[in-house]
Amino acid sequence: DSGVTQTPKHLITATGQRVTLRCSPRSGDLSVYWYQQSLDQGLQFLIQYYNGEERAKGNILERFSAQQFPDLHSELNLSSLELGDSALYFCASSVPNSPLHFGNGTRLTVT
Amino acid sequence: GEDVEQSLFLSVREGDSSVINCTYTDSSSTYLYWYKQEPGAGLQLLTYIFSNMDMKQDQRLTVLLNKKDKHLSLRIADTQTGDSAIYFCAESKDTGRRALTFGSGTRLQVQP
Figure (cartoon, each protein chain N blue to C red):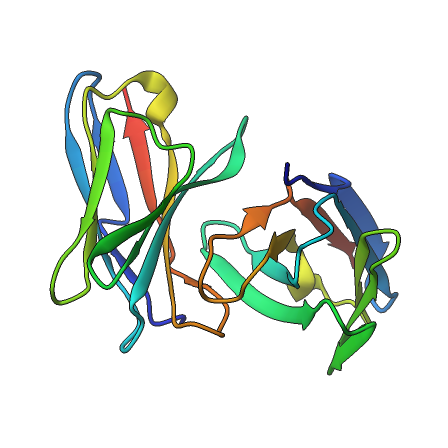
């Protein structure tokens, strides 16, 4: 168990809808990262937060947004969903000078 | 730009050694990682190596780094069926501060 908790485990929704994925980092970790894993794109970095502030952006679509709250949990919001957004979404957390630890992911299916 | 490449598939017999290879392009990469993903599970950190090291050993796992050729390998000794998974190589310029760039993963199949 990595200590990173992601909810829900599975999510099935229709095109055009909006969903929110939640991540609780390991105790003491200030950085949170979101990744998307799909068959055609592999593991793609989306966005990083550090202590509530956006630190880095990767290949995140404009329809997607994220935030990190004062208690350090993070949410990834996906809107106007398309079939191609179906993927496994991972959250990871870390402290400086330590590797990233990943949660078990949320599997999103858009129908 | 950053790019990490791995072969897609490796099949070995139980008890043999497995060697999974990875190449990266960014010469400023300072940390290189191996993660394991079992079916339906998340990414489990196996080991990582700092770029000033040539080798790191941890029980059945041996990581070799050839910085000149930008080549990283993971050797699993006495491979077991429980080692069947996808293995991802990843790189970063700074551990715990920056996102990782991942390879496409190598699927290891262990035949009994």
